[in-house]
Image (cartoon, rainbow, N blue to C red; front, side):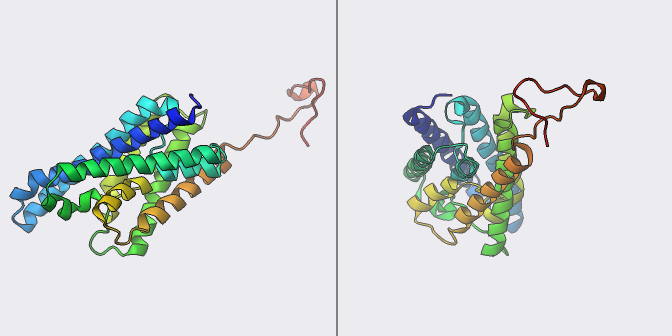
Length: 263
């Protein structure tokens, strides 16, 4: 892996830019496409379902492709909550974490700014430029817990596939991570927008100036990501205890010179 902060930071910028440009862009594009046909509550339900599936796959494929493309350069975080998980488990230096966070937010903002330029005012207003929002009947505390749980799933899968050296899917971690985002959006999209990513929320919120209950998409993912990283690290990635040793008749190898038996 290339350890140059500039090269790694640019990879994080491009990956996060892709997520917002394709993910939020799919919401805007589908709204433009289906809006003329939505003339009843039943039509809204049908087109809403089609939109949900398309948006879920747009986000999931964007991440799957970019993690596969530049994961060998930066690790393919594209998400401040994922970077926080690496930080709290001491898998990234503080200075490099700051570079990642800065480039992730910058990439998200640049993508949102371009989307604002591409789409008309009505589409932007209807979707808040693709910013996540709470669904009907969901209060901010429920939204917080939903985002926490969805992000927990995401970071858990990141650690299980891309971090754990024994992970069965390490060579195709991007696919597993992308599919996790897809399934999270299929469940949480109508409830919270299923951002799972402070950068995914920040770019559209900043450019659209839409900050209603904004803290939900920062506190939830950061807490969920940190808990998932710490839990996986503690349960499965801690240094293992030394292998017990004993006399040959026990079937366990004797210690070599300089080694001692485990207490």
